[in-house]
Length: 476
Image (cartoon, rainbow, N blue to C red; front, side):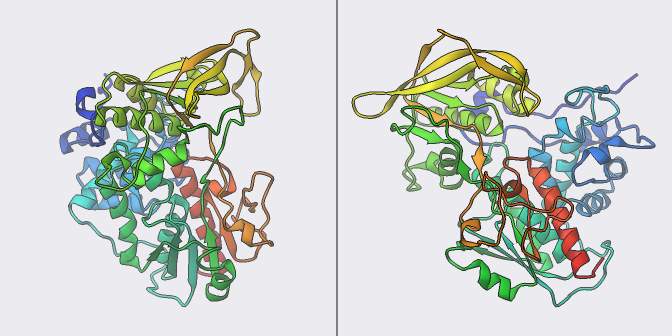
């Protein structure tokens, strides 16, 4: 008889919607052991290849069943320096869990019976933090403590910090330059604390300082310091500046007051503490009829943050609605985030396409003119294309809109370096095998080379770039 799945504890809706406390609790030791012993230790585990950074999942889960917590931490850390982060935000239902033997073949996402790998990984990371576990990295292939090589990482998002972690383990001096005042890139400004607490984020990043990584905040490469200055000083450079520029709908009325990009809205709250105004000097408008446009994880984050902002500001009769031009089946957001949004009271309207924003006499948004859609043939993404239905116009009342339809490359750096080749979207062009750019010894990865990907995919690119740098230096 199959052992039952161990589901994590979660805050009730009443407990969570008035604050930014973490919603999903980690396993207790007893729960962790119950879930870990569900793993049947497959002879040829597909979950490992399903992980973009190829953690030895079979091994660390077995170590957990033996209560070998340091061993499990070491096993994960060989491939992933950020288990507590990834255990919380990885879209595992499309990766390792989807590849679990308990997920039927050809399933579009993981079965509920699949081993809850991310929560087990999170348990290991949280245990290491709570017990102050550190590793001397003697398990690395190279045992040298120092080299004479120096590498600069531009940006401190998931790709860059992965490069820093990999290279520092080989005795390379890595300096990370971050434009903002705090570290983490999109992990910090894009993901709310109810999904990723900041003490967890900063702890795992700061662990890298144990291995010699140095961090410099408030440095805009291309403005504060030139790219060419870094090129003279460092043996290699990694560019991980992300996709920080918002994508807009480009429809009439988009410049009206109270229309935010999701990037600005989330940054004001996640990074600049607008939820604690006036204690923190970051204002933000709070609407009563908020509309979020989009269907990805960013849209879910924006909707759930907006709902909390209403409650914090005593707008108890407010409403948050997500508009998406396809159906729920096509939504790219994680299933768990959609379910949490629904539980918390976010409403959804599917097969809806905005065509115009309507303003009042003061220039503030007051409505959205929309068309109903139906699904046609699949587009280049493989999803069925939304086709507007003629004469189906209707208006949605709103006093605040958040546009969450994607991000574009941050071109602050690339615009100052003419030799750096980019595509028509501003993404840096790289050799997909080595992650090297058009400039020798300059590498790039993460969203700056391919739009919005997942955290773990960015880390995978970082690992690939680090491997290339190590090979170039003759260290592997």
